[in-house]
Length: 89
Image (cartoon, rainbow, N blue to C red; front, side, top):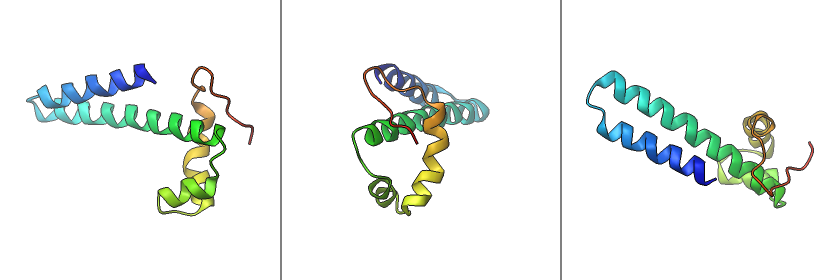
């Protein structure tokens, strides 16, 4: 996940350095995209570690089904990190 962290740091720096409103908006957009990718990786890792959808849902203030609906598509598109097995659906 180190490269994801580096991308987030780069985009955060770009957001802080941008002086044009459109450039700031673009940097914020890119930051959000990378943060969502990290979030998906972490949900996949939590699931691989045996964390239930109910616990993930509770963390986000939603039901188990809500968590599944929100994260399953993203997890399916996210390649697992090295050494992290993602359980089948």
